[in-house]
Image (cartoon, rainbow, N blue to C red; front, side):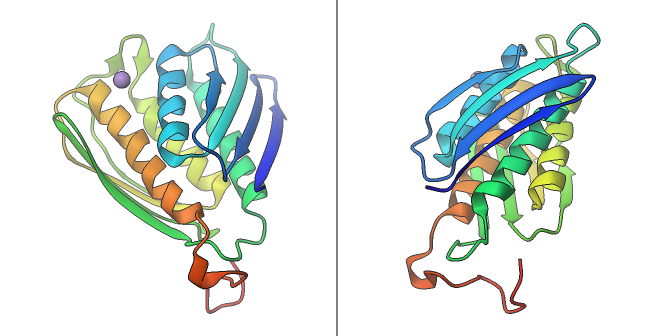
Length: 195
Ligand SMILES: [Mn+2]
């Protein structure tokens, strides 16, 4: 079973993340930020990565530290669960349509963090949630998960749909990338000999 638990505590947040790459998309996410929980649930359900998140952050300031630090902890858990990366597909991509929103995600579990984020939101808020925090989450995930990640909004009118489609698109791409490739069993998907 490729799984990991990460506990990360700072003066701003205390985060505990448990994930299982070989799961069925079972989730239990409680961060104190309702919309963010909804997004983490999508990430788990559509990647088939079981995900449990407990976050206690300084929400009296705003949601920023909690969202960012959860991204850091999930990235760290991903790296630990992936281990030596032998036998995985490594790459994944998906076009995800959700009503008006169309998002393309493409990623490489390269250990070379890089985020290209072309996702504009028509509103600054979704309920009480700052839409700019969606990018903050994926920046943290990319950096600490060692992921080259490109996310593009090809279309979209509604901020809730755009954010949700982004999480689902990345989830589907991640599902593909972490999956064992039966033709690559025990083989590192790189000609360099290291990932
Ligand atoms: Mn929704």
